[in-house]
Length: 173
Image (tube, rainbow, N blue to C red; front, side, top):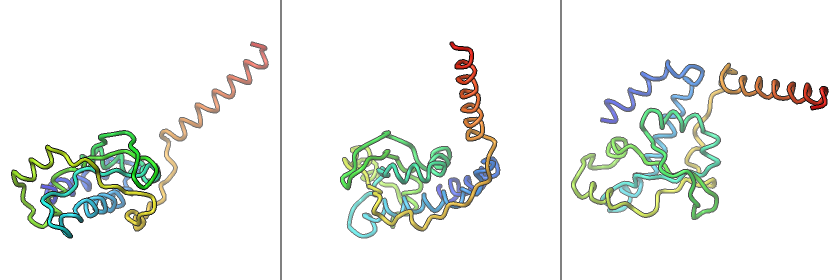
C-alpha cells in the first residue's frame, strides 16, 4: 500500500504545496531515514516487529519543521506527544509512523497477528533521533523563495503594532 498509495501521494500533492513544493524530495528522504532507522532492529536482530514510534529531538523538528508538517499532512507521521525527555539529553515530540511504510521495509513484508498484538501492547520506549546522530545529515534543504504568507504578514503586523505604540506615546495615552 505504501508503494502504491503513499509515495505517489507525495508527487500528487506536490503542486498544491505552492512555494513548499521543493520540500517534497527532502520530505521523502527524511521519511525514508526514519523508516530505515525504525526497522533496523528487525533487520539486524531476530525481533518480530519494527518500532512504530520515534522520538525526534526538537532541534531536528525545528530545522525540518515544514518537512514534518508535510509528512503529518500526508499521513506518513502522526504526532502523539508534544514533548518527551530523551535518554541522550534534550526533548522532542513523539511521532507514530505509518504502518504501511514500516511493513514495506521489514524483510517479511507481511502483517501477522503477532505483530498486531505487539503493536497494541505497545513498546515502552520509542526509537530516538538525537542531535549527535547522523540520520538526517544527508538531507539537503532547498532554498525557498520568499513567500507572501505568514512571514510577511507577521512583519506587517509587527510594523502596525509599533506604529500604534508610537502613536499612543505621542498622544500621551
